[in-house]
Image (tube, rainbow, N blue to C red; front, top):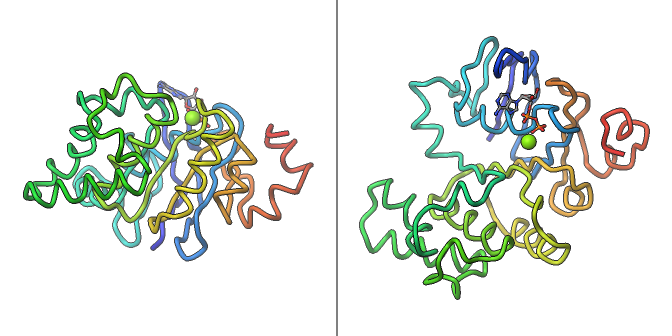
Length: 233
Ligand SMILES: Nc1ncnc2c1ncn2[C@@H]1O[C@H](COP(=O)(O)OP(=O)(O)O)[C@@H](O)[C@H]1O
Ligand SMILES: [Mg+2]
């Protein structure tokens, strides 16, 4: 499966957040880290895949399907996003209710919702949290539960925006190993280079709304002058 940006331009509040951005993310190459300094356009790029911003110019394609308001439903059935702010993502009272929300909304029968909820919590090692209040979890637990809520919808692609921003080193390592165990194709916006190395064979570096470089993480992340140019070192 492929996600392609072809000269995609997105304006936010009159600023150009993505500037004729062109890139191809191919699931056969494995997870891709989206790197770049603050304001480079990482969050905009991910949210644009879900059709959250009007595309002023160019195209974004999921395989052959262009991101348009008409296709938003079809795209959101295949792509899930874990937003940076876990508190904004979790809004039901209990963890189990929160994880069940997505599959319930897909109109699945209650047994299937239950099975997916249990399954998703298990794959995030969060079964023991099922009856807990979402507002009373640690940051690491919140992150795993919001990811479980996305997994319960069985997406082909998972977009993660700064998943480690509020995690301690141990929670980062746990999250990295959980992500590596998932079959879904992942795009992970982060400025945590160690986390990127651990989770992503590929990386793309953004600068001022454009693609500065893309390729194997093992090569790009060792390129000091490139990292400095991108404001990452
Ligand atoms: N909520 C917002 N409203 C308006 N403009 C925004 C908002 N968030 C980001 N932008 C602008 O969009 C551009 C890209 O930002 P963003 O996608 O958040 O970058 P990154 O995630 O790489 O830090 C920046 O110029 C930023 O000022
Ligand atoms: Mg961001």
